[in-house]
Length: 337
Ligand code: NAD
Ligand code: TDX
Image 1 (spheres, protein in one colour):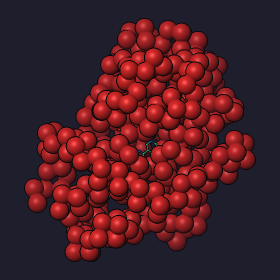
Image 2 (cartoon, rainbow, N blue to C red; image 1 turned 180 degrees about the vertical axis):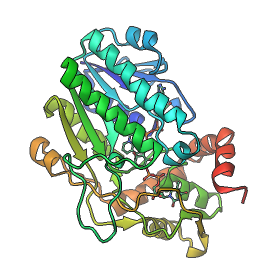
Image 3 (tube, helix red, strand yellow; image 1 turned 90 degrees about the vertical axis):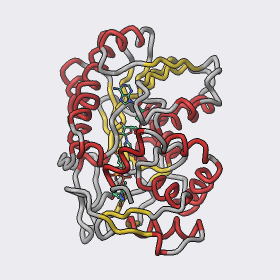
Image 4 (cartoon, rainbow, N blue to C red; image 1 turned 60 degrees about the horizontal axis):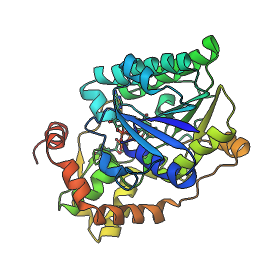
């Protein structure tokens, strides 16, 4: 099988490519990535010379390059996106251009080239926010209620993907997944930001009261869910993917990281809240378990410790990433402190 992976130099995309080459060595992967600030080919250096792998630097908004690159492809796995909520609040235009227009360009090309499956990677953020008191969870039937420019642009892309299925018969599947963590995650996201700040002797900025809840999932569990959707998922269907449950708020996550690193709570700094900050996410993934026999296998505490160890062992990777343009973003978001 020939897979066309967009955004394969990013966090989840690169973990997915490494996972796929290990588990499906007979397949060929094309990694199509623009290499924005979030894309890093270092993530893939172990497989860059593999005969199962080709890299194309390209922009999903560019119809000509996308069409040429899609020739002979069986399956598209579409990760490429602007993915950081805080950046979407600062500069929403890029989110609409990449996440909405870019997805539409890809869909057109996939239709024209007759690909067998277009799998779209989406997020639980399209469903909006739950309250702390509420015990309900998001399901595939939950109405869309995106609240940040990022979530709205992902919701737009999900709608387009479904519209291409209904209108043109393009074979599609979608996964709506909760917050991932693990190796190669860009340190603008909460867990790697907390770990790398502490490793640099800096405090961890916690938004608002810190009681916001995310449904954490180790990235390899997400990759395995996508694998099962490609193998057994029904065209036209959406599958929710989430963690082992048990609400963990941001403050608890930081305290766990402080414990692992032997630091104390003086390293927490409460900062101004994110505008429109979603209070709680929780995903009901029972459809995915029942239809695809998937469930998360990586315990949060154990794999958080392993993730901390990964960042301790890969200082060169994140020090490179944290220098340059990232510093400008960090100062704009958190001040110069
Ligand atoms: P990321 O920001 O780490 O990586 C995004 C990748 O897309 C980068 O390699 C970047 O260079 C590439 N890209 C961006 N714009 C492009 C363009 N115009 N053309 C080609 N490539 C482009 O993101 P991530 O955290 O790995 O997320 C991947 C996907 O998973 C996204 O679609 C995101 O919405 C979704 N998702 C992420 C999470 C999470 O917790 N990180 C959870 C659920 C869903
Ligand atoms: O400095 C911070 N301080 C803080 O308290 C940052 C960066 C975040 N936070 C909070 C905000 C959230 O409640 O931590 C939580 C997690 O924040 P992010 O890592 O920015 O993730 P989130 O906003 O939940 O979105 C993520 O999960 C869903 C990804 O970035 C999306 O791409 C994915 O779709």
